[in-house]
Length: 304
Length: 304
Image (cartoon, one colour):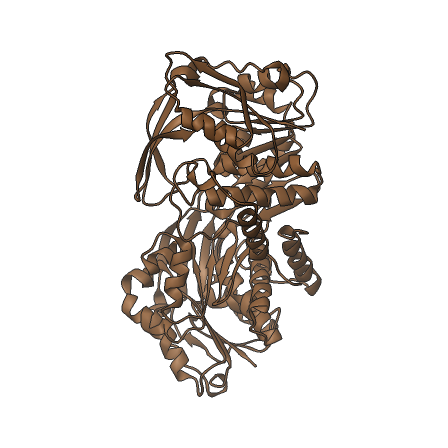
């Protein structure tokens, strides 16, 4: 029941009104795999780095039960670098610099041992590559979860629509959903996207929580009322990791369990934003995760 | 256990991408009293209109059990007029015209029969007038609910702070909460506002639902996933009316019942936005209200 995670691996430089960190490990695959590692093992990771990626970060990922056989290290190459600055209102960020480096030529190749993975998370990369990953598997996986972004929706719509046909669960934010569906109403957008392939849609709304749409239900999950948010980087990927982690752990894809998975995703995202980079999700205990999960449940519980 | 409602009474001209209506009855007092009328009677209304206010609207309000003894009709005067246009994204609106007319000199005077009201909703008017209403009562009311807006927070802060000391529950939207508290984080804003007087704060987040803060709890209420929103005008006031209506009906101010009141408020707001002006809340049945209430509960229910 192993989980395959593909996505970007980066060295991030992040500025917020509170602090600044330089060249810390990031990228969608790192956040997703780290968050999921609290729920399931092994996690098979596919990505590319240069020879500048710190050895300590490999060690950290391996310590979390993440299999790096599918990690390509380009000798003499430089890792994908991203530099961003958040405003006083942490919902707004400027990308100051993007150096694709080895990520520009990334071609995800699955080691033999990865090809039988039954669960797949496609982090936010070129939809053509996402599709190639699914097609490289030796048999149809049980569950394919996919993330994407404005850049691909606008620039590679046709490719993305092809990929969506192979996706079970699309995780997307509200503005991306509206863009993908060409529809301002979020509920109508979700319905439209469900006709493109994914049976389940999760729309992330940042500080306003998330909405889960399945064929039979709509579930509204609250956001955790954090008094201090230090760095929103990776929150969406931490959400995806917690979400799929709970589903793989339980192997229960009922609507009711999907709701719980959304809360576990929200839980990991809330830890993520409470510190810089992946720090917030580097060393959580089961007790902390379950405690936060229960607080989430309390937050919207009402005795009728 | 009668409920006193004070606020603006207006003739609204509303344009949305879907339709346009001209000179329809509106204003905070009308929306609040109409929404509350599904829960309690009589409702004592205080406001001012000109002689141009349609007789049919008086009749409608009276048919809903709303006592108009405190309604001032200025002979030969013109009713407050507001004209607004909503964009394709209904979250954005432009005020095209505001004619204060008789509202400019509004001085809320309570008839003797109103002075024993135990429950008060202060719709969004000048905080000095809001305070005058509370001070006109013959004894301290059981519950004072108050709404306000950016205009007063920026222009009459000192007056507003005086009024807030007399308020039990403040209902405010997210940007107003941040402005009032001078604090970007919503949770910290709520805590700060609670130190100004109100023991309970409700922060409305439009299409993202609402947050209830009491001394002991935070409750996150979802928004109803409406596929069609026709006109957001008055939604916040309909919320306030449904909220106080349920509290007056039950006379139970526990945290648990406050949560239910928030859902009843959300229920009335969801009906309000589904048609133009007050049309959406003009003739609801108990079955419709309870049905929508239950749908709201389902929306965030999770079996742990």
